[in-house]
Length: 445
Image (tube, rainbow, N blue to C red; front, side, top):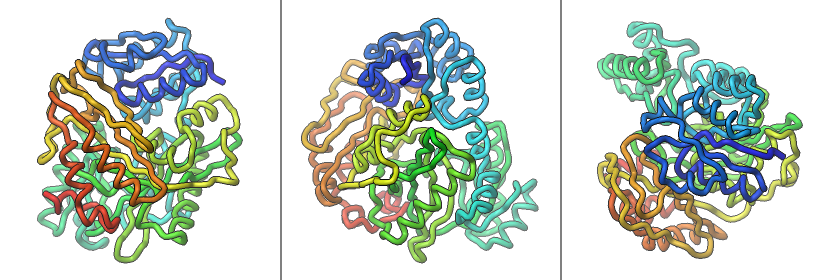
């Protein structure tokens, strides 16, 4: 097993990785910005190194500073968490070229899946269903208009290099397409340095369902069930659950098999997620994208399958067999994750600030992965995620009731937070029935 691990991330995910590393007897090394010096992940690590100021470009995305920290602390491996450098193929290559172990998929897989158009074409060739759309970037507005006319309105306009729900727009007709194309292209050039635009069929009522895959050290790819991710605001997830209440046994078999084919198509190793759209009307699913990293919502899979995905990541990176039998996966019960963000619970606008009260819920089937404690400050420099509240039960009904109780117990004062939104959601009949789609939040608002 790896003996020392540098975690190239911050907040709750850094703290969560450090927890598993220390349980396994691995020396855990944190890197942090000046703004994060007092956060729990820094104090709980065996060693911590400041890598720059608050600006993430000068700290958490500062490759030279992170590699220097790895060298000075004698780190054997680097885990990138999610966000920041986690899906940066050049960083993965540089880590390995430096003689360190990269805890993640190979750089070639990251590159292959990093461009949405290339990924779509690879998946189609592998027999994974893809939505009707362009196989090459729409070079200009006229090409986009022609593509949309062939696909049929409404269409989704997407940044080919985007991710995390960013760089997307919906066009119901040509006039709207002209506006959205220019908007998405400009955003993509500014945010991703790549203005390539993809045009796809837009489905008015869909569910967002994803599959957790794990590429093992022996070359096999296995699927650890699906997660429902349809509770979203601005195309970004707020709630995830496993298993999906929308997926029948027959659909699950097809969905998981497609995800395994997707991983095999790029010789995938380590943890990854194949994201799909499920057409509510037809029960057809279509490949959306592959996230070549550990997902924010990985804890719901951990509960249902009884595995520690970070431990499995470390084992794959070290060339070891998994802790579970890949041929006898046995999912049990139901789990739900709520993302506790520092944001207005009505409009979902960021609301950073000093935390004066932080009381986490506890009890059977309740887990909190948090990045903060009372006395810390949520700064405006990073993502608004403060914690993840994860609950489990023998079935969905029990998990929902435990979530209601846990939300009622969660006390946060100081920064704005979305705990009141979750209290509302858990009373919502559409959510409680399990028959909801990606429009649920907009209907609540």
